[in-house]
Figure 1: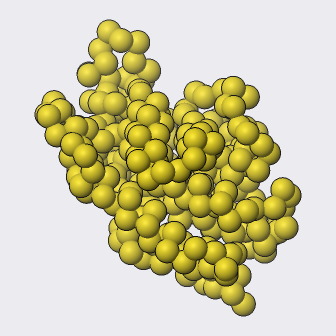
Figure 2: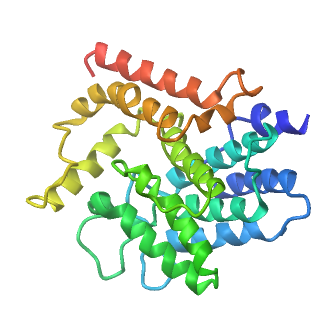
Length: 292
């Protein structure tokens, strides 16, 4: 019953509210590791919220409109549900308490590269789209060193964040071990599925386009790959292709089908995230057919 409660009975956790996601993550953590550090989840969320709200060093609050705090919370919830499903399925190597914790830190910090220093007053953090993964890696290194994590643990977090790069060569990521690799694959999967399954994903495509447009303008002449959409409609036209030609093959291939740990029951049950994404893709196609 507890497994169904975590993964199936309350799929509509409100990701606009960090407290709701934090409570869900805490429930998953305590279910998998009842003897674990009962302060960890609250501490990790506090670190992340401090960063996104402008209460860390000389960084201002997040001002990217698509890659905002909710985007991170969507990925975090999907990621932890996936790790729970992996644990229930008895996948090997077995998930350890510390690797779960490092994974949570990685997903919470994976888009901190969109943060700007207070004296950076030009545009929004979206201008860093091209380099945000490397900026997130650097940011997490500074923060976690301050929090006194061991160098090997910081490296693990950074390796997981590398999985979110659109064009990253997965084989080039220097994972320390197989468990770190698989948790990184879960993180990369959750980053993609969490956002595309959101109830307002289709409505936020114009906001996503504005981020790409800002990045393209900021990086003019610097080899930007973000100017590939000529308009919001062009982005919408290419969104089904993005799912069918990039995301789904990637989560099946590079990320080794980790999304299947979201199936209820595992391995052949329904997948809430895939259902929501398919509905969103159908909605995009319907809007295009209507001439929007």
